[in-house]
Image 1 (cartoon, helix red, strand yellow):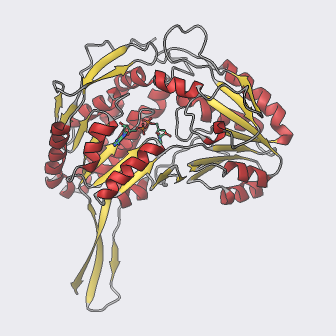
Image 2 (cartoon, protein in one colour; image 1 turned 30 degrees about the horizontal axis):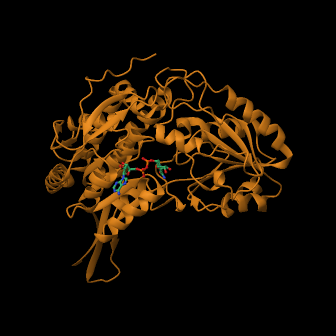
Length: 486
Ligand code: NAD
């Protein structure tokens, strides 16, 4: 097993402003807890109003500086250096991230830290290919459209993939010439703290700043700050509503990447083994704590018995273990509060049409930590809250259907609309399904595949706006139309 970060060696970061790490703030303490032991790793002092104001002022100064006017190739080179720095620090970042999220280290290192480096390389490449519009219909005038950076971005990130999601926001904001202040989740700030420290070695002073603290205090101050020009948020739907309202007061553009309750439709005509592997991956990676988790599995009657039997056997065989152990497949949930939330969906005996097939309890053999067994239920009525609320854990709900019509009604029958998964080897079935499903992303015979050039965003309660190449360019720039005589 990789050694746990030793408390005392990790700085208690309240803020990173103008390149300096601030640890001696006087705000209320926030305990960062190890989900595997429930012990406090470190206490950080929350960044209060004064530190938020200083962070925003630093970002404003950096925005007014040379970065936005820099030769694109120089900006690309800086972004690529950030990616190289992340690659070089992979193990350190992965250990910190795992220590306060409980996500198995293999998944963090191979998927999330690798993604963080890719995010910087992707936006470096993207800005090298940006084009502009030119209109010359009027013989007397030329009209062109410039894209300018917007200003200072407030970036608010959740705890479930802090470095992967935070790096996407930072890379996109600065690639298009903005400066930013990021607020990681108060529950899991360690990885992003270190990431932002590393970026200081490469980027101009004050371009990327960080404040740590609770959402309703530090986060709210940041979002409402009159020197913040735009807000990018990833997190829960209720929080998204509050932040969107606050951003709206200041007429600030805001993107909202919110919760999900994604349906995974498996037709009789699916490649059985591929669909089974992908269904397990989709609901059990990241301990099930993913916005895009395929948490509702809809399986067609002809293969349902065989599928359910195989799925339950594979779920029961997943290796539960310490998140820093390299062979762990399911680690502890992020917090005790979250464990209680997930277990709150388990009492099923009082509900008709719900049957518990696996798990549903704290994992035996673990005296400490927020460990839960992978849980599988069948649910007949999709109005049951198991099928309507975001559980956000290793908890799969399986419902059987007969016709494609029925599958679409079940899949579209929640207020969310982030991802739909469809499995069939019949092209006509796939083409009809992608048209009928109401979600921002449809993955057909495809496990979790993120194409950064394409928009990633949800319908309904899953969000407003999107992240991705052109989507980020549209969000992090504003257009200026210029006309001049020929
Ligand atoms: P959360 O909404 O509780 O918190 C997210 C962040 O918002 C935290 O940094 C928090 O401190 C901050 N915050 C809370 N209230 C705030 C306020 N009033 N003003 C400013 N900031 C505030 O979410 P979470 O529990 O950390 O993350 C889990 C949620 O994130 C799930 O619902 C999940 O689906 C969602 N998520 C969505 C995506 C996506 O791309 N759609 C990706 C990952 C996670």
